[in-house]
Amino acid sequence: MLSVFDFDATVVGAGAVGLACGRALSKRGLTVLVLEKEGHIGQGVSSRNSEVIHGGLYYPTGSLKAQFCVEGRRALYDFLASRKIDHRKCGKLVVATEAGEVERIEAIFEQATANGVEGLAHLTGAQARALEPELNAHAAILSPESGLFDSHGYMLALQGEIEDAGGSVVVSAPFEGAEPLPGGGFTIRVGGEGAMAVTSRLLVTAPGLSAQAVAAAVDGYPAGDIPAGHFGKGIYFRLVGKAPFDRLIYPPPIPGALGTHYRKDLGGQAVFGPDLAYVETEDYSVDPAKAEVFAAYIRRFWPGLPDGALTPDYAGIRPKLHGPGEPQPDFQLHGVERHGITGLMALFGIESPGLTSSLAIGEAVAVALTGSA
Image (cartoon, rainbow, N blue to C red; front, side):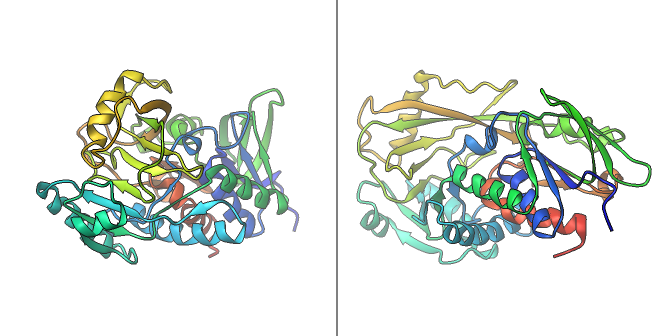
C-alpha cells in the first residue's frame, strides 16, 4: 500500500545521533528525511568534541548512558572497521596522581565492571609508568576498549547509508515547526531558501543544543515535559611538540563532566580538554589566558609539560540538563508515554557519551517507533 505521507519518518538534526536514528529507520525499510539547519552535516555538538570512543566506565548501572555506551561502542567498532573509517583502539588510563585519588578510581573500576566493560585492569603506579613512562601515577585503571575515531567520516557513512536506502539528508533546511495530523502523522514546516511543508508519519527530534526549542515548536507538545537546558562549554588546547602518551589519559572526573583529559589525535598531535564552564550563548571562543590553568592541571599527570607549549585549539558546547552543582542526569528519550503525541520521539541532553552511543540510540528510537527490532 502506498503511503499517504511524503516520508515515513523525518529526523530533525544531522549530527551523529540524528543520522544514526535516520539509518536505523532506513534499515527497517522506511523512507527517511533528515533536516539540518546548518550548511553541512555534523556542524554542532558532533563536530566539537574529543572524538573519543568511550568504554562505558562512569555511568550508573542500568542508566541509558551505561547501556547505550557499551552497546554503542561495540557496534561502533564493527561499523568503523567494516567501512574502513579511520579509528584507533588505543586504550585509556584513568589515573590517580596521588594516594587520595585511589578510592575515586576504584569506584570507577567497580562501576565499569557492573556495566559490563571488558578487559579492565588495576595497575600500580610502576605498571602505569611502564606503559607510559612520562606519566605521574600513584595507581591507574586500564580500559583497553577505549579509543578514537574520525567522527566526520562516520557521519558521512551514516548519510550514505540513508541515501542508499532512498532517503534524503537536506542541509540549510531549518525545522520551523510541526503539527500533528488528526489521523496520525505530522505536517512539518521547513525554512530556508527552499521553504516548504512536508508530511511524515513519524518524527524524531535530535537537534542537540536546540532540543528544547524544537520540541516547543511541535504543536501540542506539553511545556511541562520539556526539561530545562543548559550550555556546558568546554575548551581545548593543543600541544606544540611531540605527543607524550599513546593512550588516552584521564584524571578522576570533575563534578558534572569527565574533566580535562589527554588524547593523541589521529594525526598524532596531543590535545587537552575539555574543561567545563556554563554559558548563556553559543560562544566558541578560546581564551588563551586559560593556558596557565590548563598547564597546572595537566602537570598533575604530566609533570614534564614544557612552559608555553599549549596553544588554543577549539571549543565545544554540551547540551546539559543540569546546571552548576546539580547531579548529572541521564539521557532523555521522550516517547508517546511522556508527551502523548503518537509517532514522536524527542531526545534531550544527548551529551557525552552520545557520540559513542549513537548507533545504540538510533536502534532504540527505531524500535520504539516501529516495534521492529
